[in-house]
Length: 136
Picture 1 (spheres, rainbow, N blue to C red):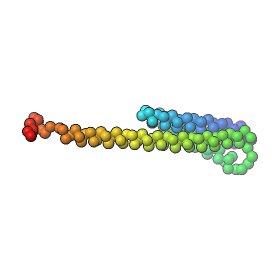
Picture 2: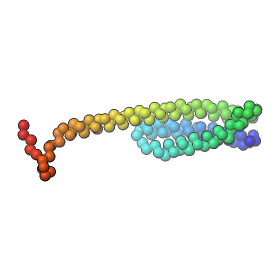
Picture 3: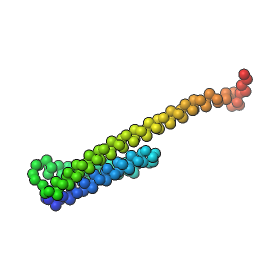
């Protein structure tokens, strides 16, 4: 890979890490707000796939140990910092998803308890579908 292609791929990687971080944060906000997340999740997966492809493309240059232009080295450092930020945003996303699951679980438990309580008040049904009269 020549210097021009190396710099272009490195710039794209940096852009993708910015996008991934923003997407993770948007997903966390959507989850916390109870919104639909399918589109943002699909976008995150697409960005991760492209980052994986770029990582494979850049790996030989990174692992060779050969000197790279200063601009490329600076892009790689910035990408590494953004990758760490994306990892933190992903951890926050996971925490938001777990909190949402817990909230939903609590609501479902409350609904189930309410159903059982209402069932105790349900009138007995006699043969033929008529409500039987209860006497105390």
